[in-house]
Image (tube, rainbow, N blue to C red; front, side, top):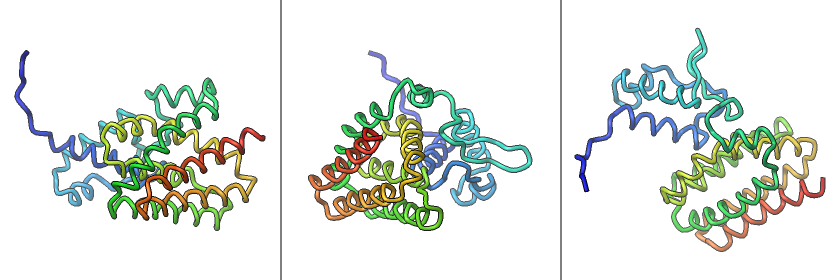
Length: 233
């Protein structure tokens, strides 16, 4: 067995991880322009070189895109390459039913763990996503895909389980496209969209009240509702 010396994590890697997490959590939304390098460097108290290296890595991964003369923007999951799950969903090799079956297993357990482990910042992230969903519906009669996906990612981050978080990070683009397909079909059905928000509120309340069983059941009710909605269409 050959042991290798432990190397300290580079500053640019830490910047990369923090920016990536903001994208996953929905703080940086698809299409949104991120702060210029100089401002990010000041906010993070690091060099511009560290910020530039982190941004370039995110661009290579397809999570950010440079637009000539405009700046750097968060790319849409639908335009990103390299995620085989997203490619399968986008090409319709997998159905919404397939996606929802997987979500049922993953997210009910995530909600249960979140009710046990969520901290105040996690609850605030969920509340912020809920507020965005409600505002979208009130002003546009639609629900933003990003706010819906960010709610589910906030639940996942609340599990504090690095394996769970890693799985959902890789599942994120797949989740985003699946949610967008769901909501596109629901756009003409305001009552269904209202029910989606009611379901999310129930999940949030159960997590806030530290009730693992109720949280898992609320998530199950939500995903079952979506399954039944499309099964009957």
